[in-house]
Length: 105
Image (cartoon, rainbow, N blue to C red):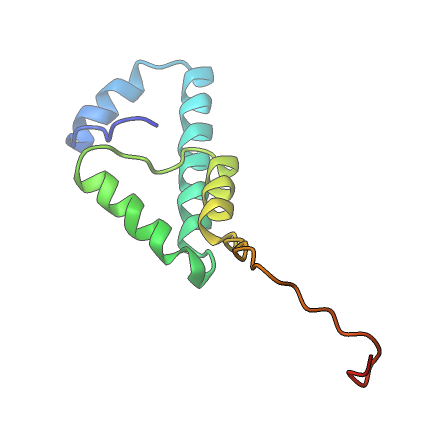
């Protein structure tokens, strides 16, 4: 993940964009689009991903930005946070087995 960029004035970005080639502008636009789609995908995700959204917001405010930059990362995060946890019961000393549907032996 990348650190959050410093906030700059729009004029500063416009000056830099004027000096870029069309190919460079296209790459920047594609990356920005991917970032936006990943964010929107997370934002619209299932209710079960509320913890994920909260953790990502916390990471951003502490300058450890962990927001995904690609759709695949967003999907991976959602799967990790919403996947049901498997609980394995502890073994017991005795196992009881019933035979038949009536409980008879």
